[in-house]
Image 1 (cartoon, rainbow, N blue to C red):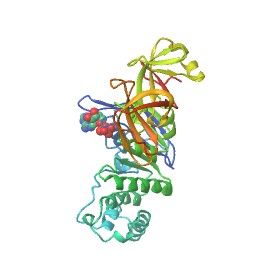
Image 2 (image 1 turned 135 degrees about the horizontal axis):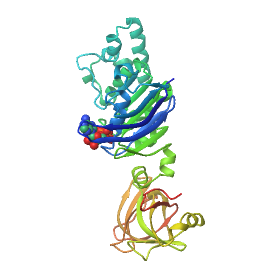
Image 3 (image 1 turned 180 degrees about the horizontal axis):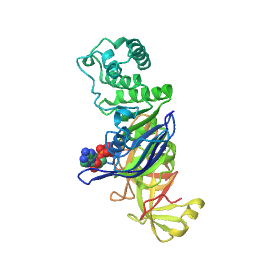
Image 4 (image 1 turned 135 degrees about the vertical axis):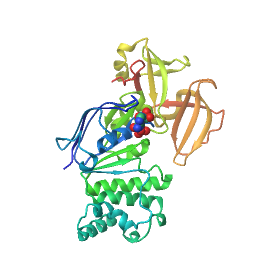
Length: 359
Ligand code: ADP
């Protein structure tokens, strides 16, 4: 079993930079947690504190109920997989995978069994006699994972493990990590700046900005009910469209173009009862826009046909109106300057001052 608990954790570096503020999280046994956020938001620092590679400035870290805040990295029973695979070039794949066990002077028969079992899981059996430079980037990443698996750690920690791979390999390796997680049923913490990786891998996502946790939840929760504007615009691709809009009776009126009125549903009217006459932020995901009669008039600026979908970029109203991106189904043949009408099928509403979702 491996349950992690991070309680009120801060990180203040020696130069007085505070990288992490009051981080709280309970990781269940076998859960895959993904820490996601833009570069510099404190993801790696948090992971490194869990690994024991950075001191925890304040707060406590528990593994299965035991306080390991001060426990040295080597005694934490965790394995970290890095983006630069850090394989030994002069050793074979077998030797690389066996290395930590050899260091620990484990019985050679046991080592052999463990390496073969890990190689089997990772599809590396036929590569064991090769050297790292004879392998592809994806295979090398698998060897790095294999080195962790043979140690049978309580917790696996991944620091941007796919960022050195090209787009195609990233997708394939991501799916392998997911299968690995299902097979090992191990507790995992995974750091990435890539929202697609977070959505596709995580049991739960921790979305961070500037050292603060913004929201913790399942991928669907973060996508469907983002807690604030930051999460709303970070999760989802292309990002959510955001407009300042005044609440005016049964409608929202866009601040940048007061000729654009957006009708509110009864439920939305109730939510916005205390916002009459005030400005809120209207969020609309590109995939929650359809083309249809009676919609908001827009002027198309450019069109990106992706096969299954078309991204249509437009200005609301005339050419100087607010920008909007719509992800329309199928192959839509708009050209620059086309007039179209966009119907919003789902809205997200945020308080302009707190930036929190209005619920
Ligand atoms: P992320 O992994 O989200 O990209 P990091 O955890 O690496 O972010 O960094 C968070 C913040 O802490 C950044 O402002 C970064 O510059 C700072 N930082 C990271 N490592 C150190 C260090 N060793 N000393 C001082 N500041 C650091």
